[in-house]
Amino acid sequence: MSVHKQCKIIGLPRSSYYFKPKGVSLFNQRLMKAIDRKFLDCPFYGVERMTVHLRKDLGYSVGQKRVRRLYKMMNLKTIYPKKNLSMANKADYK
Image 1: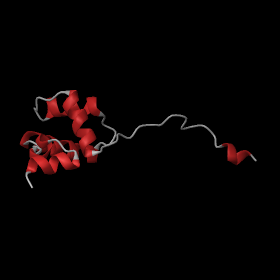
Image 2: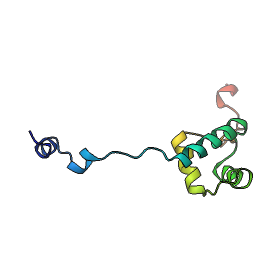
Image 3: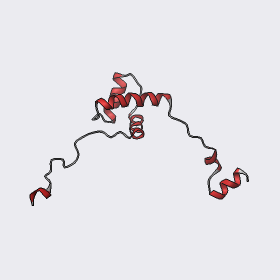
Image 4: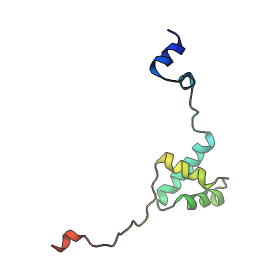
């Protein structure tokens, strides 16, 4: 059976069948390694602060959009005080 018929049966466009995703670029790999090293030391660094670190300290020419996308790709979450952190637990006053 031809590829055209097989794709038609399962409802998959032929372009999706032949699509091969690109891997992560070498520059992004270097950035992720640098971000990971700094994030282990300073887990409170957000996207903006990490962008400044990469630009000024390491000399990379990056923008916040790229750093934000890499944060999401690496599943990094910044540590910061959450909402209502100092509120008392109502269960303690029974």
